Length: 130
Image 1 (cartoon, rainbow, N blue to C red):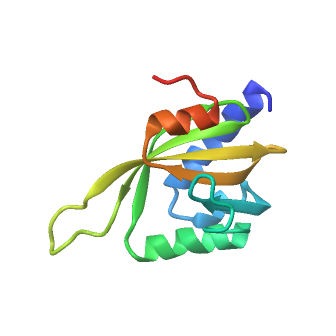
Image 2 (cartoon, rainbow, N blue to C red):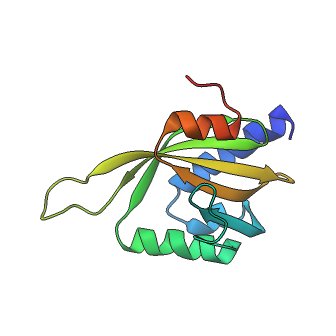
């Protein structure tokens, strides 16, 4: 993946994830895109349709994600997000920082793995630690 192609994809991923339209992100996924925890090929989603259904269901439950960073790595993107759930008992939203490593194949996202630790995620994405 060239830097210019990767940078353009990184911008498109950030814009699509910030969008209220899950289909905007779907356009960036391979048909066989997978999503799940690191090193677990069995859990999670196993197609673009399943990934989009998961995003739609999360939005319907009131979950939101604010993109905090997208960094081009080696054949992958490191994506930082602040994930928040619906307000509990009228209080403010609880937010937690999470990272995703999106592996790129032929200019599209082919695999998404979620991490709680930026250092581990950055290492997996081929991004130098900050």
